[in-house]
Length: 427
Ligand code: GDP
Ligand code: IMO
Ligand code: MG
Image (cartoon, rainbow, N blue to C red; front, side, top):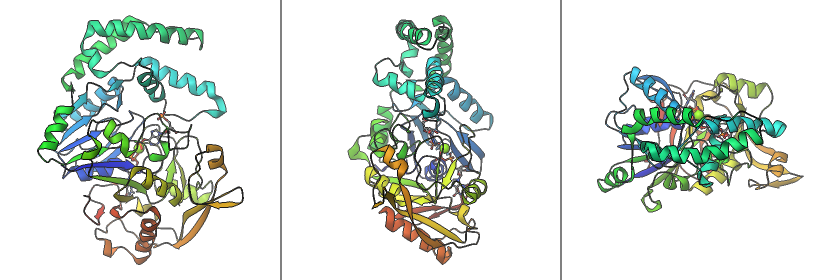
C-alpha cells in the first residue's frame, strides 16, 4: 500500500506538478489534500503544457484516479473551467472525484480576501486574492459550505441564508460595501451542483479500496512548507498546511499508511508575495535567475523573488515533514553560473545561528552565511543518468543532500516529464 506524499519544501512553485505528473505514470491514485486555486501546478508532457489550479497533476495518466480531498478548498467556477479546458484538449476527467467534505469558496470569500488585503495596506500578505484565507477561516469558524451541502438544494438555501446574513452585516457595516444577494448566489451554486454533482462523493471508500489492493497512491501537496501557518514565516503564510501531516488530514489516509514523504526543492529559492526571504537576491544575479527560469507566478503572473538555495530552511523542512527523500528541480536554470552560493547558516544580530527563528521579525533580520561552490557551466537538460552529470553539478547536489539531511531520489533538469534523472527508489 505505498502512499507517497509529495511536498513543497520551500515557498511553493518548486515543481510539484511536474514531479507528480512524472510519478503518476506508476501510480493508481493521485489525491490533492490542501490549498485551493491559489496553487498553480505546471505539467509539461507528451499531451502538451498545462497549468492546473485544482485538478490533481495525475489527470494525464490514463487509468489513474484523481481525487480532490477534504482538505482542498474549491472554487466551483474555476474547477468547471479547468475541467472544460482539459476536456477540450482531449484529457479524460471521468475518473475525477471530489470529496463531499471539501469546503467551497463562495463569492464573499473572494471579496473579503481583497478587502482585507486592502485594509492591511503596507502590511498586506500579497495573497493570490482567491479567497483562501476567508474560506479556511469559515471552515474552522464552522460557517463553511461543503461540496456535499449544495447537492441538497433546500437545505443549502437555509444554510446559505444563515451565513449570508452574517457576511452581509460585515460587508455593509465594516467595509461599507453593498450586500450580496441570497438568490443570486443560491442560483449560481445550484448550477454548480448540477454540473459537478457527478464528481462529488465520499472519497474514503475509494482510498480504502486502493490501499486494500496495494495500489500506489500519491498525495499531491500545494504551496510550500515555509508557507505553513504554524511553521512558516507567519503571518506571511497561506491558510492551510502544506506539510506531510496534513497530507493525512486532508485526504483521510491515516498516518500509519504513509510509506514515503518526498520533499520537492528547487536548486535555488523563490517566493511570491511578501515576507522574509533571507537569501533573496535583489540584484542582477536575482534578475538573471528570474529571467533564465521564467520565474513568474503560474496563478497571478507576478514576478517571483529569487535567491540562492537556503539550507537552513531546507533542513527545517526535512525535519518537520520527515522527508524520506528529496527531488531537486530546475538544476538546468543554474547551468550558466560560474559560482553558486548555498546558505548554510544565518547571522542574526551578530550571532551565527543554524535554525529558522520562530519569530518573524527576527527572520526578517537574518542575513545569509554562504558557502561558495563552483558552477558547471554546461547544459544539463539532456542528461538522464546521475553519473553523466558534470562533476561540479554532482558536488553541488551532494552538498545539498548533506545539508538537508535526506537522500536525493530525483533530479529534474527541464520542465518536460522526461527531463528527469531517477537516482533511487522512492519507497
Ligand atoms: P508547482 O507549483 O510546485 O507545481 O510549480 P510551478 O508549476 O508553479 O512552477 C514550476 C515551474 O518550473 C513550471 O513552469 C514548470 O514547468 C517548471 N519546471 C519544473 N521542473 C523544472 C526543471 O527541472 N527545469 C525547468 N527549466 N523548469 C522546470
Ligand atoms: P503552489 O502550489 C507560491 C503564497 C501567496 C502569498 C501567500 C498567501 O503553486 O506552489 P493565499 O492566496 O494562499 O492566501 O496567499 O501564499 N502562495 C503561493 N506561493 N506557490 C503557491 O502554490 C502559493 N499559494 C499561495 O503568494 O504570499
Ligand atoms: Mg505553482
